[in-house]
Image 1 (cartoon, rainbow, N blue to C red):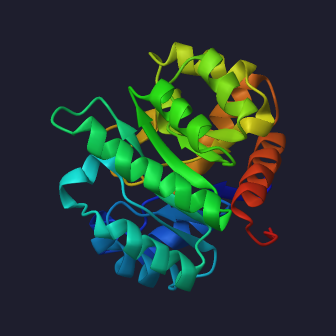
Image 2 (image 1 turned 135 degrees about the horizontal axis):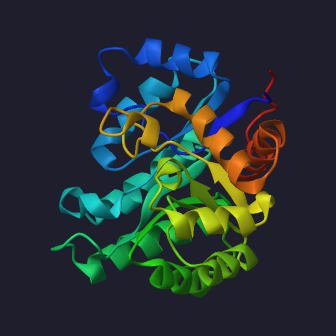
Length: 259
């Protein structure tokens, strides 16, 4: 199989502290030669940087996740600018909107999200977007800021929303959820969407695929996702791996990845 890129993996999470080297080794053995590691809070940025320096093929992104709103401060947007200037990450994120979790102030989410979109436009970086029950609002913000590109990770919207995002230069990240029998709408989207819009992801340690339901997810499971996508599309897994990895390499400006 061609090499795989996990476009969304939280390898810096504490769930990997005990065996991170082994997790990376299993990923490499499964063909996952590159991982994009997005941040969630400003406090997590130093550890994330350190983790990504541990091994080749780990690419950090820095951002402020909407689910951790209580940990964000307005000054963190200025801090983020400094991190971007110094560290030159592959993307800004994980950022976005979450209208599913109760108690998250929608206006405050919008301020942090738009602030990060504006930084992405200024520094010409892609954005890694979280959009839960908020795809329309995310699309509106992307249009309002303009001049953006990126990925909506763990996409769960409609084919119409997917088409709008494609026109705006945004890819869709898909992973474990599409392997469950009940995910028929998501599976239909995978069958019909342009393969050039697809990124594969694990979101490890979260969102395990059906084969490891209820267990810690890890990037090695990306090979399972690739096989599932290939089966849904009636394609060969080699094509899925080659095209989706190329999509990720172009979006995040990753170096050429050797098998």
